[in-house]
Image (cartoon, rainbow, N blue to C red; front, top):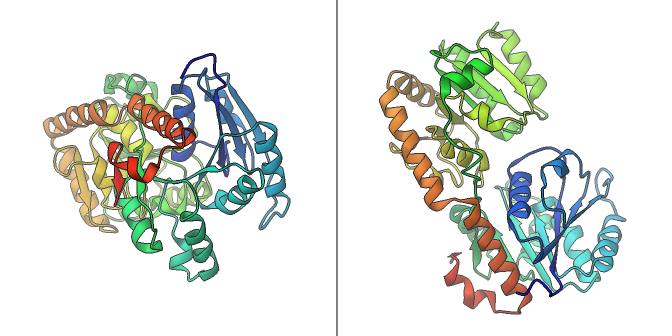
Length: 388
């Protein structure tokens, strides 16, 4: 595509563009790595577009905070319709269930024919809670958007099976900036946080949501006398609860709740092992970032984790909710620095070879180009991977 041509206008519809999370981080990385002369981006945050704007380096971006009301907001589709129409959006890219209904309606009102829906996590509450109306809406929209995306093959397969999706689902894995997230001297990084260089440190970087199971992880660690220091970076609705657990067990000297940080590569390089005890995952950006820093990972075997973590090579996959085995595995790694080092080297190579941010950006660029060129995406899926 020549730089003299009108850039493709992509309207990204997200629930929020304020606090960092895997989805939001992926959008930032994507925009920063797509050519500014070929794509213009419209960020439509249903709630608020806030601090994350500071991480976007591309100047060809406009932001909208729609300040969605609690519950159903009947004015939201009209607000989105006006944005799509005023910017002559070529593609509307809806991300996760909270954007689906209003975004789809608004795109149709604005006569945008190229609608993409992407699933970034396992959002199947409608099925699990018997919300039949929501399930019917999802099935309707899944089969009417131009393209369905998932961040992992496992997630795409589950969407197909559980919603009887009648089209292939394209898989574009998350990508990581391996130049920013790279191995650094652990003792130096530990010293910056006031940690003893010889301490065995485990931890995670996460939005502090219930799905991450960090409350259960901390309770299990304290009850079994797990000796390692624990670092948790991030913020969210579980922050107060986690602080209460630490206080109840008198463990302020063993656990650091760091809150939101801008120096995530430094924090990750403080860790001897990255832990992810989530009960559900799509494809975790922060697991990729930890792997890129040369850190072994111990996680529950859920969602897309198996596509990232090669068991016994880059870390360990544990049966969900088996916190006893989870902690035993960490104890074994604490006594095995050579094993940890080998896993770290393995993870770094895997990210550089297979999960680069350049690969992710190219895959999205190809998709946006194909969809606007009216190429039949169902016939084209074999070129870029699909979930049959």
